[in-house]
Length: 138
Image (cartoon, rainbow, N blue to C red; front, side, top):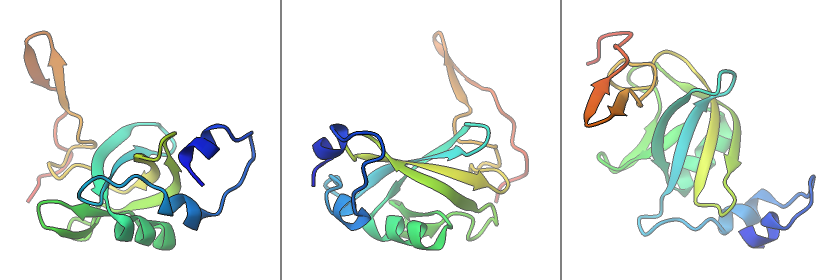
């Protein structure tokens, strides 16, 4: 099974998850980009990274888990802040190198206390902070 097989597949075609996960083109660090999006509003919350263990845990538990590149360990979203992400649905992109996580976000998604991590708008030759924190961050 390759992602090309899925690309050519008709609507409704099913493939075993284990086969698809075995064919994800993990990067050199064994990671895949993961985009978290609020399931009902469509707001893009954040981008993080997942390894196979983080993806497996997320799919099994329904609580989103990432790989922290700075801490070099699994990072369960909200484990210290309480601002957890509950998985509603996971989707792989066409060539399997990114995963979209449709989530129910509880509290702000960004460690800065902002609702999402994309608060720095590029406007002409400036970067403008366009969102204030909802809560103070630690």
